[in-house]
Image (cartoon, rainbow, N blue to C red):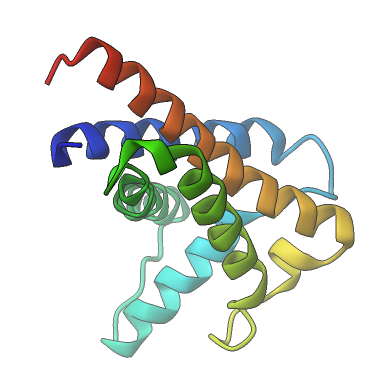
Length: 149
């Protein structure tokens, strides 16, 4: 599959993940706060360079943009290789991203409770990333049927 198709589909999956997260983040206290984890990670990274983002709106936008770009690139890997493995790759990469999101914050010096404070939040965190990966696979399947690019 072409890299452009993979990136388009990866972008669709990344946007779908963020729409899901943004829709649910204020519905309950028992949902992942991937946005806050990303903001903490961005501030920590900038701190290594003696910088920070003081404006909350700017921090939110920068984090959202970085999240969409990184997830687009990550999800674009779903289309690499043979198309017959599309769904297993989507499931594997979605599960891997979700499990990583749960297990990596603490070793990276970030607050793990934002995505792993309860079993429900952990399951939703994994589910969000699987959802994005499955959207990516669906878009790839549709793009490849139409062969528009």
